[in-house]
Length: 308
Image 1 (cartoon, rainbow, N blue to C red):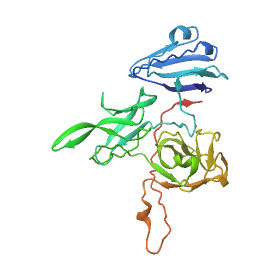
Image 2 (image 1 turned 180 degrees about the vertical axis):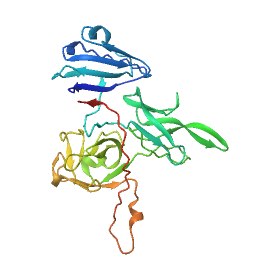
Image 3 (image 1 turned 90 degrees about the vertical axis):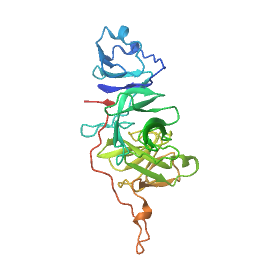
Image 4 (image 1 turned 180 degrees about the horizontal axis):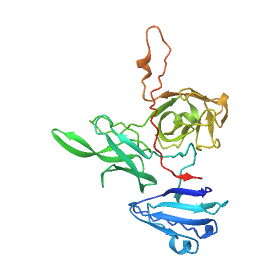
């Protein structure tokens, strides 16, 4: 269920393909001013205003994109809607998935864009300019048929990335990995019931002038910059839920002593995933020093929930 409490909301229905999703706005008819719905292919839409909503929008076509305008001061709870958490920042907002990324930037150099389609509850990405080359979630990881050389012949073969995010590296037995241009951080040091939070976190959005990061596994944890410090949480991006606070520097450590909820005695450190710490040591400097290599390029994000 999504709680729509912003004046304007953009987003996507939660499934695509063979799934039939029932979304009924009947109980919220007094809260909604207007609805615009795009079809799964993104090449058409229909609009409704009060008085027409009940008949026109009792059932959405799978994979539909939507725009909903609420009446001022109203909210609505809607089943079977996937929506990102808003994090307003200089006209941009924060998302839970990347809007685009480049696959193998020094080789294939293929840009993939988020579509209006969903597969197994996660967005499908399509190669820019293509009508059918897609990366989709198979219920376990993102997969796609990607070009590779078989002898002297260029062929397409299935690659997998072992992740619930589309912008983690793709691999195939016997082939070199296809990395993406997405920045990532590595977190290590947690133990016990928090050990599964160690690992790679890939960029998915932008807030407070910094990129936001999401665990590449299917554990739904996020690392982001709040107003004063970096935070690791299961509830982005509002300082609630289970969280542990870090410091002002992105590549510092999150520590229960800095403030936490459900992280008693835990501490873990954050490293730049684009830098191998071993390459930064010298004979006279035994302490590992991490260099910040994140590009200053502004991240393009997809609006999912936004209050003007």
